[in-house]
Image (spheres, one colour):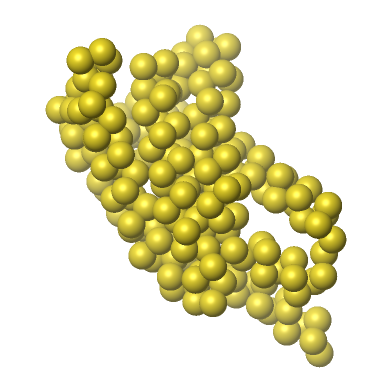
Length: 197
């Protein structure tokens, strides 16, 4: 993963690595909580379903943190958002959607995180990472909705409708997240070159 490669170049101790990874994971979670609030304020609930703002930070987290830390961010983000927004009186995601979103975001982070070693060598690997993560995550959502529709208010048909609505947001993220990853990798490499001068 990008952070591990950076740590190795800088010879950062294990305790400091844990602290930095924890801080980055918390920053990803905070962004995944804040970004939907901004989108909902600007575009309403329909905007959230279309642009999928919580997914973007989680995809980014998977790419730069790897599987374990990325999955932690994917699981925590919807729970933290739910707890904070419930206290404000308008739970996001809704309680019935929360377990589905936790599972879906964990899949997003796990698949994008599985590419993190390749991304260290070639940042362009972020493109297939994000595309495959999006497909796998959305399929997991649809599958869970189909399996549990007899005991949940969320049906497979509703899940499919939400997937169609969010396609534009997912395609935007498939371009935006890799661009951010490529930029981060370039910045880290530039710092490495400065250190070697």
